[in-house]
Image 1 (cartoon, one colour):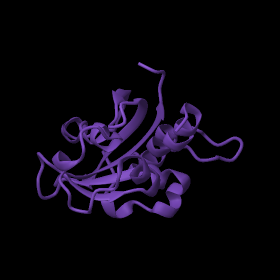
Image 2: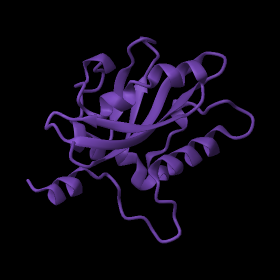
Image 3: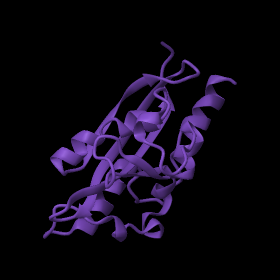
Image 4: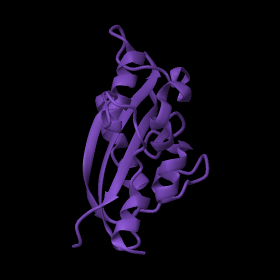
Length: 165
């Protein structure tokens, strides 16, 4: 596959209406803040509404921290994100996700988001299984009910093929 075709395949961005924020991370953070409101540290898992998230939801994932704080399980992987890195079965522990995948790089920040109880925005570069350099950006945001703490993480990630290494 040529570089242009690969880049088109790797990008998870969708067309957004004129005037709408293009950056998925910013849109997801805004949505998360609206759910949390001014009086809570974070929203609950039950408040997520995929319809309200529009074109961001296919690039999202949800990790369930309720059973194992050290190794959360996959609860959901969006269609666009799954197309990039394969969609592990529901209940798959994060530690079992292929290390060379975008999802593994995004999920590796779970501990920080849980302990800090705030959204974590991240980005970087890594080499995937096809030995392509991928530039990625993502967010992990805590979900839960106080005083029980963080039970889930809402994440989103996108990537594109970077310059040849």
